[in-house]
Image 1 (cartoon, helix red, strand yellow):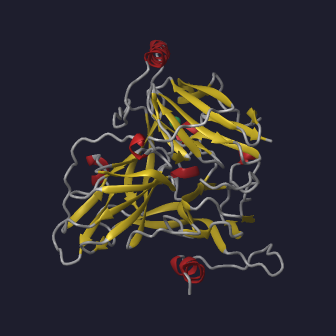
Image 2: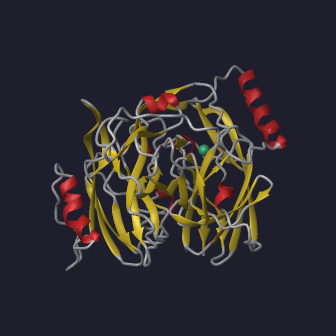
Length: 484
Ligand SMILES: [Cu+2]
């Protein structure tokens, strides 16, 4: 029995024992769905006797790992047992806008108490994920604030397989709340140079707003932190043997947060970013992941003991953002040591020899924060305009096959994990520093920084661009491209 068949017959049904599988309502003759996903409210035990009520996929968090085969047509039936229409987005895949899972691109909703059958060819190979793509706004039970996040692995035709086993980790916070808290300065990115003209612009706007007596806009905080839906110390550890090479596929499934991870005494050899193999696999002591970013990294287990694989933020780790790694034969309380200072730099994984082609066109996007402008929420402007969720206008018309360069200038102090649907883009510049060969679908744009990436408009139809912070995308940080 192959892995795919095994998952189909035992994974989805056995893992979701409280979810009876139904025959697809609209099954094409002779075709049964390869996978069935049910969106429903269920209880998830994140800590001892701590049950959260969440909207989930198949009654579990994270939702079931779906293993697709690259290039093999796949049928997924999605049932929505909730009272509100849903969108399920195939993050990082090159699929048509009719199934991508964003109403802004024209994907139909999965109706409340209804279902939708999606037929598509999974691509490209690598670590992807799926998640809710509805607007949450001020509703902390909607969108990615809840439990609708799950990994996807698209098996390639050839798998180098230089590892002993795979472990999938989904990082996720729960029990969100709004605050008008101050800024959280994160200075872990390299290069970290701020551009003076962007800083002057952002600070002047903020000063003017505060001078009018306006408070700072709402931010989201969380009370519970989990890896694979469990707080640190709850549930089974990752059991390893000395000399084993473990390939971790790590997903930041947060609605809004940027996460870090370290494993005392060990290093991560990063082999893929957002599921795409990097030209230069490099070893690092710490991983940083913006919202929706993924890292695939091999850890050689050569430091026996019982360790905490956890977030660098002490508060977040104590509230659960970690998981125990236990060597065979070791028995002691799990240990944590803070790593020495390290800056995350996408250039570590780049191809220094590659010269990037000139684009057919460069599109500049200036990002402004209008403090607390939308009923206390920060409104986000791209070239002076917040996305209109009623008219959903197309901002840029693209020509199929052309290479486009997007140049982002961030006139806010926030880091934005910016995301392009239905595409892989190549990082070409961070601040003034060129970079090539790193293919991603989300990238962190630092506060007051500039960044460029290139992509080829090879997918006809609508292509959505947005910040992956639910709090930013819901308040204007979104735009549409259309390729024809
Ligand atoms: Cu953002």
